[in-house]
Length: 400
Ligand code: AMP
Ligand code: MG
Image 1 (cartoon, rainbow, N blue to C red):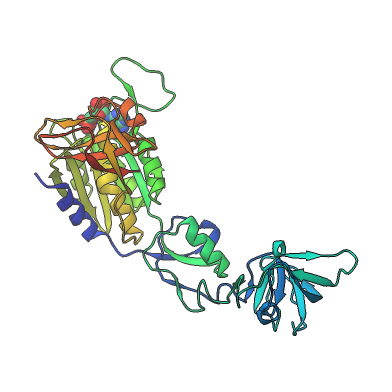
Image 2 (image 1 turned 180 degrees about the vertical axis):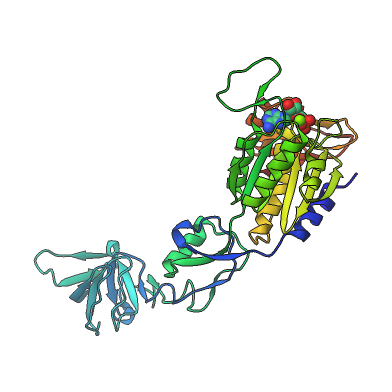
């Protein structure tokens, strides 16, 4: 049996380089950058006010004493978006708002709350506080200098990156193309949604689940019709899916029974197999294969096994295919609210819930067919074989 980490390394090492494409910033969220992005200009682009107030020469107010305000003459006004084209000379000030460009000659902003005016002489502003030079001024380029790196190649674009890129005037990024992922579910017992339940049959759930996880990982899922347990139909399904998709994910049909046709049908369809029994629960049997420059991920049919093996082995591959450097699930440090026991001799990825206080609990029954605990869970805990962790233990939860 292979360790999960070794299987994942093998898969990642075979992923092709990303295929760069231009993407408008509106569609850039969560895309993986194929090129670094540099700032076209300084940010902020000009010195500007951090407050609603008055631009002054700090020196004019240096002698200010408590209880004896200093008066300056108001010579103009620049709303945000406007420029004051005069100069603040000794004894004068200019009305500004947050984001207004600093007028020439001024070297500080006094906030409005530290001034008062007299209706009888609106051209005179009384200052109650003396600013330090450059107080309340946001400098041109203090956030980002023109030409500086805004986001590195291979990073995933976050909402924060969108804010930075948009502010810097970037309208387009270069990102790894999203792979199209064919989804095949094998099993003669499977019914599509809406078909009436008949004895011996079940409603199929893996394709929709995997499609959701694929979209979350930046891929474009393509759902194919159900594949009955037949060698010929399985082979034909592979031929269609590989013709139309970059990667193919199957569920079911990878165990050792005589009705498990995924491996043989894939080979008949021209694929080259690597098949592993991975030392983990759920999801021991796992098929990885190559066909031309494309790849097959054959997941076990049990829905929890398909879910967990997808997250641990397929999701990293999808992200790497798009060029991502970081491909692991986000992790969360928590504290066990109750003991967690893995009596088995295989490592168990247990479904857990993490609450708002970081307390971690088992999510319910852990059988690989139990979906109520999958729905309740918001994380996985990697528990080694024959291990008991007591309540209060610090743990690392993988989230999705
Ligand atoms: P298999 O891996 O094909 O032996 O299937 C293992 C278990 O998972 C069986 O109980 C199947 O009925 C079930 N199963 C397989 N595929 C699906 C699917 N797409 N949706 C729901 N259950 C499935
Ligand atoms: Mg089956």
